[in-house]
Image (tube, rainbow, N blue to C red; front, side, top):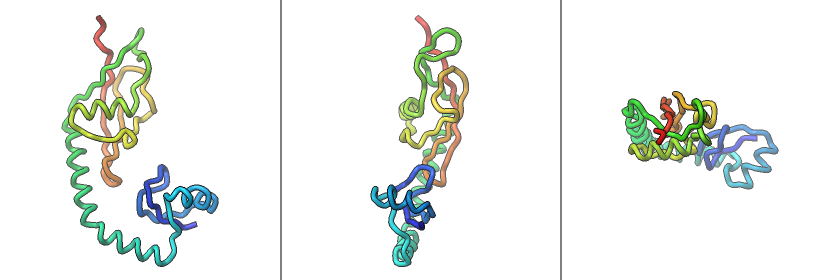
Length: 152
């Protein structure tokens, strides 16, 4: 089944992408939730026209995303402090929400859903890498350290 996405769908595509999915997934999930519409010839013509009109706006969006990515790379040594137990184990964990909050304090605004920490939630101190998506074409890898909070 050929569909045009109206929303970003995780592991499938972005808004206004033309995708091919299995009939059940399209009919039972994407179409009823409003995440996609059938790719009829008239819808494809409308999509082509929309993409043509949006090209200029897209260029501005990519440029602003690139500026944010440059701000991120300017943060040389980025550290997140966390409470630790014995050794290098953390109390709890550090996840993408914690990283988004710490980056916001440094002036880089990014939603937590666009941050993907390699390996999932962090449970030990050390150096880690996260993949941050500012735009569908602007993805930046970011290295940061998780350090132990100073004990009193």
